[in-house]
Every structure is written in C-alpha cells, then in structure tokens.
Image (cartoon, rainbow, N blue to C red; front, side, top):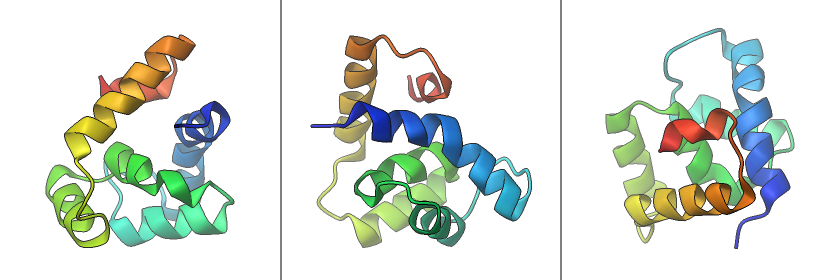
Amino acid sequence: MFKYYSIKKYGVKLLPALEKRYGIKPHYNPSEVRATVYQSNFNPKYLPLAYLLFLEQNALKNVLYTEYPELNIGQYKQEIINYLNRKRYHGYLQKLA
C-alpha cells in the first residue's frame, strides 16, 4: 500500500524543505505544506502524511475534513506506523507513534 521510499522521503526531506522555504516553526499551515509537497517533487499521494506530521491539531482536522473527507486519520496513522514497524524504520516518522 505504501511505498517505503516515498514515505521515508517525507520523514527525511520534508522538514528541511519547509524550514528552507518558510523558516523554523513548530507547525506549518496547510498551504505551506501543500506547496512544498508539490513544488519539491514529493509524491502527493502521501500529502495526508505531510499534514499529519506538520500541522497543528485543529488545522489538521479542518484540512482533512475538507480535502480528504473519506479518510479516517486514526486508521491512516496506524497503517503508516505498522508499515514503518515492519520495515524497521526508526527515523523522524517515529514521532507518529
């Protein structure tokens, strides 16, 4: 279901790309995350993962409700965590757990 390289790229390269474009922040807004994903050649299929990693909780709920109303974020998050555990990944994405 998930491609390991694409997910790993989100965990390794998206934060530095966001920081380079918008500075260091505790959270980014949806348009900053979306623009960085599309303009920096990340696989947009995993945009909900980017939102999950870098949006504040209320912004996350609002954007997912609008852009991905059919997505169960709890289930999506658990699928990613399970996938990463199977691959024995221990990088930045472990903050999801």
